[in-house]
Length: 115
Length: 113
Image 1 (cartoon, helix red, strand yellow):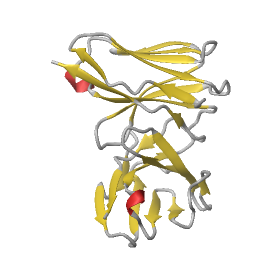
Image 2 (tube, one colour):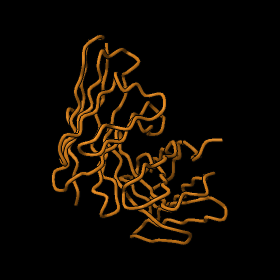
Image 3 (cartoon, chains in turn orange, purple):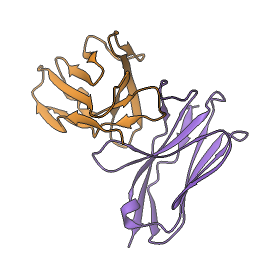
């Protein structure tokens, strides 16, 4: 089945630094990728939708200059958290679809801790 | 009112019990309904998806959709300790994976041996 690889699985960074999270579709071409954030005991909140070769569409309240999304190829999307602060600590999850066969495949998530 | 309501639990049942998980929603445009299972510190994995009202069965899992009541359910028969996880309902107003999903908060299930 479809596999989405997300790295790193966890990262600890200092406040003010930037962190890049990668999301790769291993056996299919992901025309659309979604980035979610999940706080403890909360649901997945969609941050942005990215289509290959286009600028990402951000949800209301998500700072596009802080959460940089790049979807330069059909198999890779990256989320960069710039100038991270402790309140950015969360579980970030990507999902990908090829828009042909129904289904969203999720990555395994990245736990970001900003100290 | 939130678009999707789901009781967060936690729900604790003995092994072998029948589990019933539910979500209600307010957006009548939702047509596709999914259930995901999420283990701790992992991404969600798709368990079931259904379109329109009715039942869909897959092994020990049965998904039920009642669009008239805006209510969906997931039943787990003969529950196992390995079923212990958080179960998320999700919905979209279009299929083919091209539209965003709206998730419930998730129900944390523990199956006690």
